[in-house]
Image 1 (cartoon, rainbow, N blue to C red):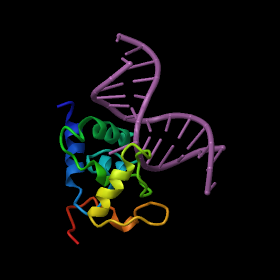
Image 2: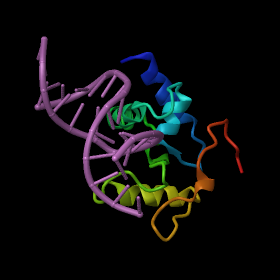
Image 3: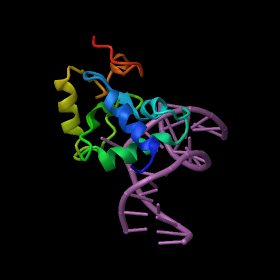
Length: 110
DNA sequence: CAACTGACGATAG
DNA sequence: CCTATCGCCAGTT
């Protein structure tokens, strides 16, 4: 492994329940990093490096404000599609409502 | 080996 | 409300 923290972040990403989304900072926080630190960038790195390899649910990771982080044409459309399939709804601004964010706790299975 | 780069986030101005 | 900066760190160049 690249490092233990990488593994923890991967674990956190995998822990996001279906039908919910999590922000980069949230993942970092769950992985044991202080909030506000640049750890969110680690999540970015990991997604780019392992989303495919480790088969991670990369589409459940969005911006803190609920917007899709990917640039249009880079998979944003696909991500929206996948999230819709999980029952998520986008508001008029193309953002996900706060109530869809993962609690950071164990799955809540609605 | 040094510098740059990210699908970010919080704070300050 | 918006722009500017720093923080963090591994993979790339």
